[in-house]
Image (cartoon, rainbow, N blue to C red; front, side):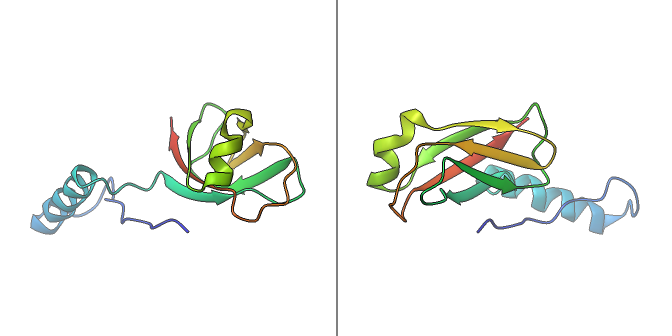
Length: 107
């Protein structure tokens, strides 16, 4: 599950509330809080796992970090293809239910 942090509207109020929202957004980024981190568990007994996410487009780069020993054991064989709002993760077929990765979406 990913945590969603509030966006700052591009147009609208130009008063102190807007400045506060910008400050909160910038401080959140400095504290490591962004909307581009997700957690993914690979589908069992499958060779692809599809993740829907509004941040994904064909030029997206996904950086994977295994979060379990079983995921680390197969990480070298995991790759992805990105489409519009969809990330397809290609992997071997495994029966382990704990193939969890942290994923950062960039681009």
